[in-house]
Image 1 (cartoon, one colour):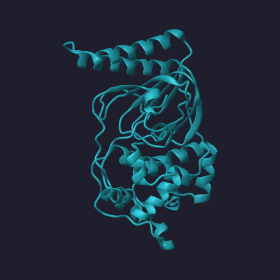
Image 2 (cartoon, helix red, strand yellow; image 1 turned 60 degrees about the horizontal axis):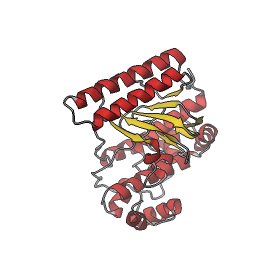
Image 3 (cartoon, one colour; image 1 turned 30 degrees about the vertical axis):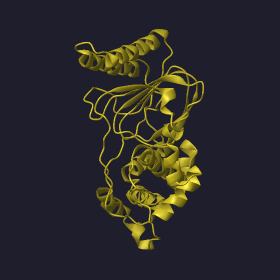
Image 4 (tube, helix red, strand yellow; image 1 turned 90 degrees about the vertical axis):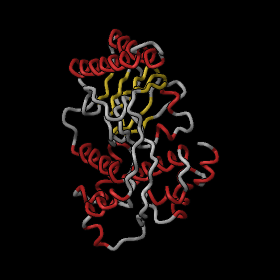
Length: 308
């Protein structure tokens, strides 16, 4: 099972990375270039440290981009689909999901998924810095036993009641119940295993490394060629492997991640457009505006005014 989430940002970098054309030799040492920009463009993480629950259908309110675009969370997440079906991309690998699928997504794993009108279920966000015992890797569980389905749904309902309660000890009760949710995951993985292969293919391993590097450095002006050089492959090979595992080119994944962050900042903060452009590695506000309009059909200012 996979979960998704994107931490809000409140502090933008003061330096302005440039996307101007580089000399060929700049690609020869991508790791140094990426690393140097990482520090100057870091943004503070304000993901809540407390658990939250939300209906999956509500996650897409305010725009389907909130669930479909590639992004990562800084907290663990569990998606429990009770009805509907669609596709979900986890760490650069796309597969289908259906009813009674539980997807656990560790922090830092890029993901996105489709939400149709018939999709129902709950998302559990465990909170930043959670010290609960949870899986370290993505888990996609296809839960077939009615008893296990009822147990998970019942736990989530009890957690919601305690989170909404004003009774003494309610936060502590919710925390204990969430701990039991971790036990449920552990038992299901032990009994039935995850849908994830025991040893991913070379293609999946490469794309997982690429999405991890991309999540780490998407706010820099690094290009696909830089990431490919860091990973020891050619840009053509990286693009081919990305298409093979998730149906998207390497450049599409990079652009999608940057545009998700741009839309989130425009929708959730009042940070000036020029500062968002600088923080995401665009050479100028004008270049950012053109790229944003090409992707979304609206200028950044129009997108913000629409509240989407």
